[in-house]
Length: 96
Image (cartoon, rainbow, N blue to C red; front, top):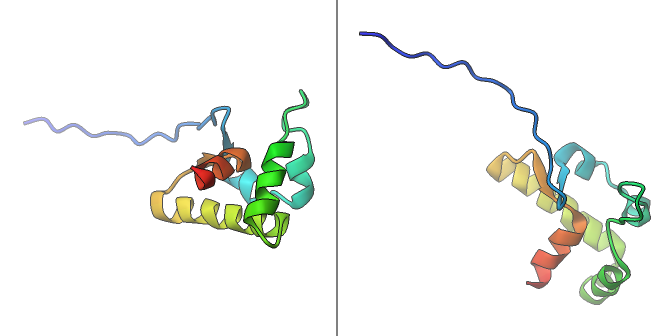
């Protein structure tokens, strides 16, 4: 009888438009939330996002960034993800 042996390959993971690599997400600092993501004027957070953040978080951006980084670590620890939602989409999930 012949047995099949499978080789395990590491596949490069390319994040979708609404996702960011875990390594990049872990390295986000406050100023990054206001900088262009891709050079085309796309920012991590919009003005409307900032209004929501200051409404939901008494500590403002620091509290939001802490929650976002906790979310990233939970996704990696519990599900083994290599890409996660960008901050804007994380905020959308919070408000439903």
